[in-house]
Image (cartoon, rainbow, N blue to C red; front, side, top):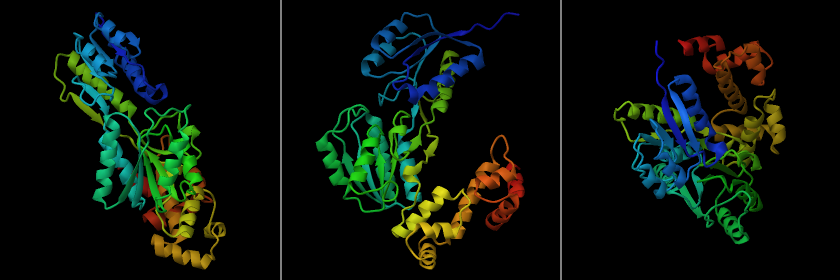
Length: 389
């Protein structure tokens, strides 16, 4: 029995930012192992020389990152199939699998609108067409919901972690952010300057997320640890991008035409961290109560604990909470715990009911059953059985 001949595959373009795109690269490498019919014969950083060298190779196909028009010219001269996974060029003219930046901008807006925010600020950075596409999608979505938006344009041409914003830029931002009426939402088109901008918001008298929530549509894992408050982000789906790129190249190498020469990969969703862990609530004491419940709701706290953290009489706070939130503090806490319980019940491997109870701030499985039944109308076991069926 003869073994199947392996296809010779080249990779041009290591990630521009290794920690950002390594999930995509890892998924491509797994494809080679799992499929058994790919053999990597070249892996090089994206450069003009690399694309020129690619033209000389005996390959069946290549997955590449085309970073500029000069690379594109060389890529078009390659005689075997290629698939591009870079977004630097809006119209690359070769089969391309890239992220859906329109969906990224829309998702950021929808996430904050669902939290009740109607006053928005947006920080736009110089960059490629994809920055503009994220911004345009954000603007369209906010306008469709009647939300207000103020935009701040950073002047720096290439923000760097090691190169802080100029003093004039800082002063300009502080003056601008003070024009946002609390509570407001700040959307960053990219996160390179997020740590500095968070500090400037604080200097302007805005606490994140108490007065101003913050989310980014362009996230880099190097930046997140540097933020004083963990930054929420719209997360791109790197692994799906890799899988679709592999499938597209397989189709072309099989002498078939791909269904599309431009594939837009939808984002995974919003990764919510502390910077947006609140609601748009005009009553600041009620807002503080909501923040405390969201931060400590999976601990064994009760309404008295919440009231003690807010400088308002318990009776007054409970009345104002019901007026603003449409439910009691106890009801809000209970619903939060049941939502968390549902997530845990769907865990793989399964989590015991006792463990679910403890991770939701409840004493034991008996109390979990009572709370779950009061909200969902059925026991945790019955709910899980229904979901699985």
